[in-house]
Length: 216
Image 1 (cartoon, rainbow, N blue to C red):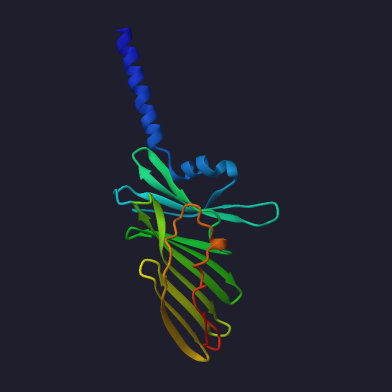
Image 2 (image 1 turned 180 degrees about the horizontal axis):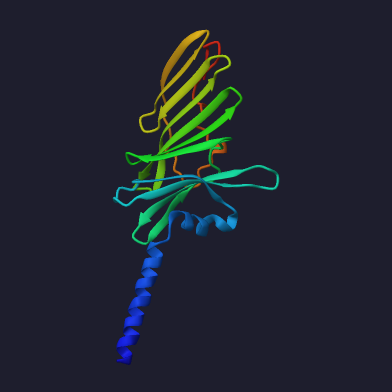
């Protein structure tokens, strides 16, 4: 009888540990992984990103500093039977003065960084998709925009990092200008990605000036 009770208690303890592991939320896992470094979640999303029918989790994490400069990183977690497991995280991610929009849909992760100053707003949106061979997320697309209501001026750019096809346009009082280009772009993975030194993003391919002249 004593052995039966002990065995039952052991099974209960094991079951409790399994339940506890499964009950670890994404935010709790982020705290375990990055909390000691002072990071907290700024924006997040859940959705299917790795193709296993278990919801995954992605978040932009931010950390303040004594000099007032923030540091942001992007982290992506795979949903598992026991909670969440970190797949990849960036180095310094693209900064946003105001907010981030994250969306997991169609097997892709979209991360938009938005900065609004007075009557102007700028944004850049990167599209990531899981690369099974690399076991990491790869940038497959980017879009950026700059709009000014004060002078009624809008610049937009879109680059497909898989095909290299890109379009750029500007609309203002001088008229409308649109150009198309094709580039040879290297594969860029999320792991260690540093937006501040990213050579291929954020409008550095082609720029249409306010007089509609093209700068390359």
